[in-house]
Each structure stands twice: as C-alpha cells, then as structure tokens.
Length: 109
Length: 115
Image 1 (tube, chains in turn purple, green):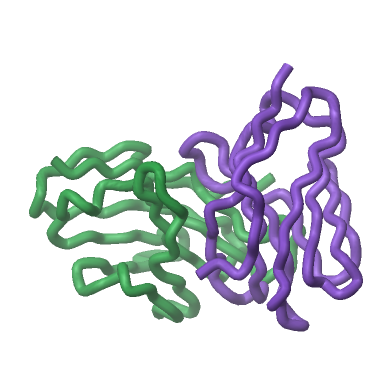
Image 2: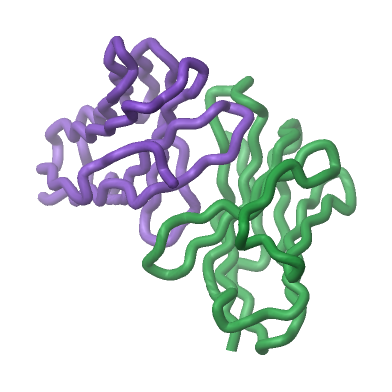
C-alpha cells in the first residue's frame, strides 16, 4: 500500500500557485519523497524529488517539513496544461515506486 | 531530456494469444520496471529487473508473465496466454538509482486490449 496521504482533488485558478500537500508520517530516514504527475492515461511524468532539503527545479518546488512527515509540492504559476493527477510517493532510490490514488488537480481559466 | 520508448502504442489481441510489449530504456540506466494501469485504477507495480535478473515482482506477475533483456537496448514484457483482465496500459520505466535529476523515467505506455 502507498505510504502517503493526499487530498482526492483540488482546484486552482490559472496563473495562481498550486500547493499540493502530502502526509508521509511513517517515512524512514533514507526514503526520498518523489512527486509524479499523470496527464490522462499518459505515462507518469517525474516532477521533483527530495530527501531533507527543499528543492526547486524548472517545473516546481518541493517543501519538506523539518520532521519529514509531510511535504508540499508548489507549482508557482499553474496553467491549464498542469491539470493532472499528482502522486506523492516515498521510496528508496533503489526501490520500486508504489502509486496511490493521488490528487486530481483541476486548473480552471 | 532522455526518453523511454515503448512499442507498440496500442495492441489488440485475442484471448489466449501471446503478446510481447517492447521498451527501450534510457541507455545508461541499469534498473528497469514494468507497471500496469487498468482503466480508472491505480498504477500498479509488476516487476523490477537489474543485472539481467528479476529483483522483485508483485503478486500480479504470475507464471503467465516474463521479462527479458534480449540485447543491450531492449527490455520486453511477455504475456503467454492473455486474459480479458490483462487489458490495461502497460508502462515501462528505467532508473539510474538517483544519480541524475530525473528520477524514474516512464515511457508513454502500450495500451493492451484483449478481446
């Protein structure tokens, strides 16, 4: 079973920041937090991952709490093309990924 | 950005037939995976493959399934005798164990329809 808890769905206005929360209270010390998204039935797309520190790349920012029990994915300026299911996954980087049901993000005009 | 390539994009087969789904992982990756997603359901792990052998498999991956890396570039999933319930999207993925910034990279999938 997935070791994360995410809201089932969220809405966001185009151009605004989308903040997607994730709880992973049982995360172990050497497990990473990965974020993927899936648009329609396409293959999951890697967004970002982190271990302890906050991370930023061209797609998003990842904020991990100090106790590592939760994290937030931030899409700074959401567009309609960001409408997708977003998955938060905790895993060792040598291990398989276990997908939960994710958060369905709907970006509206 | 490097890609994982899957062929065919759509495969229709009759129940009981054998199918082979093909994948070309990213060239310097050493870990390979197959996942499947039945319509409307979660992405499910099937099998992981490293150093020319299966490293882990799920309960779904029974004797009807097999994987192979026949040469240095291809990674295949074979279903020996397809069933209606094998109809799903099948995704291949590869990983370099975190040495790059791309995490696990997934292909665009093969839609398998068993009739």
